[in-house]
Figure 1 (cartoon, one colour):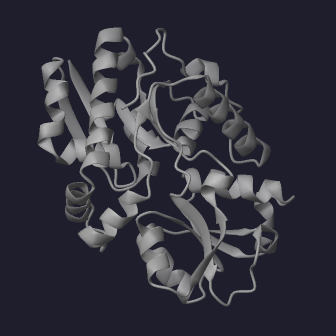
Figure 2 (cartoon, helix red, strand yellow; figure 1 turned 180 degrees about the vertical axis):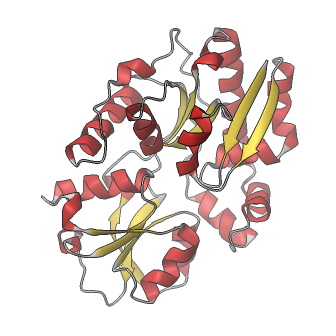
Amino acid sequence: MKIRIGAHPSNLTLTALTHYQPLQQLLLDAGFEPEFLWYPEGKMMHQLAVSGKVNVIGTGTTRAVVAQAEQVQLAYIGASRPRRSWSAILVTENAPIRRAEDLAGKRIGFIEGSFQTYFLLATLEQVGLKYADIVPVNLLPGASLAALQAGEVDAWIAMDPYLSAALAGGGLRKIQDCGDVIANRSVFWVLPEVVAAGEGKVRALFDALVATDAWIGAHLTEAGELFARVIANGLTPEEWTRGLHGREWGISAPDEQLFAEQQAEGDLLFRHGLLAHKIDINATRLPFQLDAVEV
């Protein structure tokens, strides 16, 4: 069976699977003929899925929620552990912003439509603010630190490895950790033709994702070298490895906790006018149960 796997720099599991051939052996052993499409940004996945160019996708939780709201038929097959220390809202050391309430009216740099949107909304709602109360600035990670230091934005939602590298450089401070507000997972989802291949094939695909994520967690230096080479975002292998050390590794089958989190996120995005339609997370369940195995 041919599967078309879409990978982008923000999903490290699929980046490793795409660019490190030994990790693909489990797919080959299961009878898959994998094709890999490398694309630069997670926001492209909707168009790629609708056009049929990919049918196995890994994104942050927000991209999946938005895809469902935009009528993409998808089913979750796995999710990472929550990443408690992977992202934070940063300001410069001398900025007048001391807490989340101070973000009102401020320019905030982040990747719009990514999990950072959810992180920001959840942070704002906790302190009685709305999305309309801030000025969103869509920034790619590689340009964000310079924009913050130049005063082009007042705050930056950073994620590792950029977060660790920026803090190591000094002159910045956190005002909010992501893990204190949202779970922040990667989610892995497939289109109907993959589900139709049956439980055995989906299980084999899930097992390959689990093994790939486990390989990264057990080979941080090697993985850092791989990501520095293939993502080529200006970070050194050492900076990548330092960022990887702060991440919680492991992929689990979708469970009730994940579905509850995704429904809550969809409801939040809808309340703030960022979804055109409410979602029913039950529509994304597989017709069979994957064992809740985690490595």
